[in-house]
Length: 229
Image 1 (cartoon, one colour):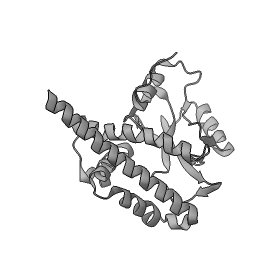
Image 2 (tube, rainbow, N blue to C red):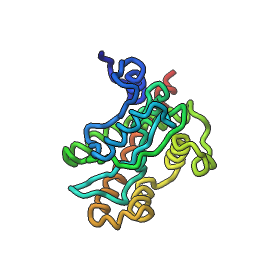
Image 3 (tube, helix red, strand yellow):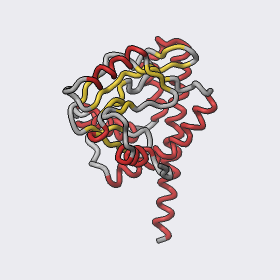
């Protein structure tokens, strides 16, 4: 089955609803990720359980950069990757969040992530395309999503809804690239990862600057279109 790509969420939702899966449980993994043997055994045990308590599970992801694990520079270490597809859908144009209709559990063993396995230039090119989608997502959020809530950004119990409001809070802050760097390198103690912690914090801060520039450009283009109508 083939489907033209439009954005990540709709593409993944189409897959969940149209692919005939061989087994009732699905483990979602990216090409730059590797499942540890311990985690694989844990997934098999859950899939073999005739009456599991959850319909989806979060797994802790360990990021690696220049051959070493980054133990501190992570914006979000937990991801929902193991689930029953009938209880799941995705939202957001890029870096979609997983929305689960049912109880969610946590796996004990991790997933390893190698985002720079194809080199820094490949990562930059990929995230450059992500930035344009992210700019569209910001504009879409403000046009159609629930109103931003500062309270929800810190106190919402649902992880995905809390992250939505946290992202919107971040979008509204001035000097976001600098804030991103301080968040990763200082508040999340990226300095404890040594030179690699500084370098990855800097790279992610620059990526944040590109997202801002794309958003400004998208807003300007939208204003020009509206003015010509």
